[in-house]
Image 1 (tube, helix red, strand yellow):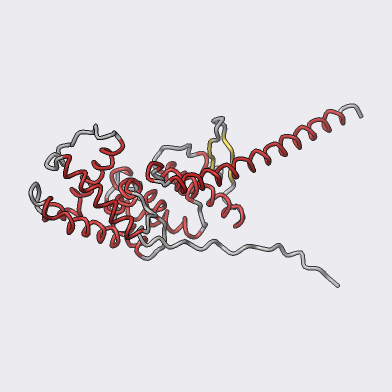
Image 2 (image 1 turned 180 degrees about the vertical axis):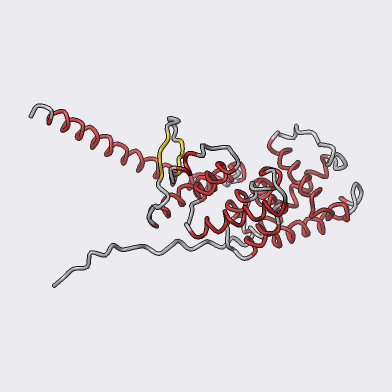
Length: 286
């Protein structure tokens, strides 16, 4: 009887649909805000102005509102949003929060919406189409958005071609979000180009030393790393102040469990490294 030596290969990870990482959905949310606050807003600005240039002014107002909260009501309006008084700004915050609670079932906070999801509005049409067809995630879209004509110092047509090339390679080679970010950094001259020449990806750890990640990682390794980086991205986007006490306790409990398990792994690895070192020393006496 012969036994198969073929290794089990897990299936590629399926993308999780995020219905709110879509320009149409973001537009719908902004229209709900305009509809509910139309009487107050029209005292200071016209609805046409809010819808002009793909809601550019409304996006600026919402971002100012986010800064208003973050600064403890100390931030000052800029030239684009100085028509909106603070009391209207507070109404915008309360109304948008209520809309997000209703539409997203409290999954997306006001800060996450303004800091991340609103940036979809300014994405080029090719990226918007990839989002509409669920070919990329929100964070992938925001990374590809960095490959703009301005950042690349090329024409709009050339920038679109470069984004298409990155998109195709990202999909074909199943890059994790961290790999995509690093590759774009290199393209924009923000990371060592030697990483590409060596066909390797370099990342820094807490000690500022470089760890080399081979690009031909197995699917399981890709899945593990993508889960880690995805978790980091999501943790960074959470508005802690908006969490309930129960949510904070549950989240901290889960984080504690992860930290304790990592400490256990590190302890085991440290012990193993010490044993290997002693074995090497002892072999020197043979």
